[in-house]
Amino acid sequence: MSIRAVATTVLCSNRTMSNRSNIPYHLRPWRSWYQLGIWRRRREAHLRIEPLCRFCLQSGLVVPAEIADHIEHHRGDWNKFLTSELQSLCKRCHNSTKHRLEVRGYNVDVGEDGYPIDPRHPRYQNDDIKIETS
Ligand SMILES: [Zn+2]
Image (cartoon, rainbow, N blue to C red):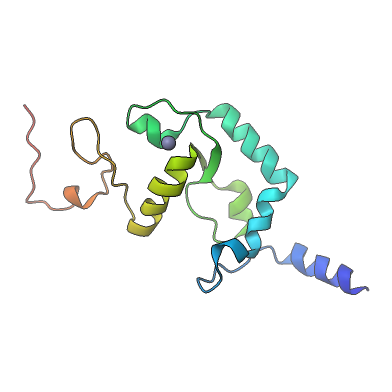
């Protein structure tokens, strides 16, 4: 068996790659998965079904989506990469709101009423805080 064949066999049999934080994002091996035809077809099919940015819609804005985003990060798990639930996002939301959501665990955006739109926001975690409605 050639070295190339061995390398291919290892890659195919072990598609779960670690998401070690000491590897910079741009060097993580799973980034190349986004160039595969199977991903491109899944992405295009998802954007046809959900063409608008989900986060912008929650704020009352109609913005075309460009990114099919894994709601739960796949962290190098091949099966999750191909099968986990997606959401459509614009580039701005993907690079800002989604990033903050992953870091903090909640969305910091506020609705037209001035209150956070995400029920996981710390504003709603304190039982002493009562929201008055008129
Ligand atoms: Zn958006």
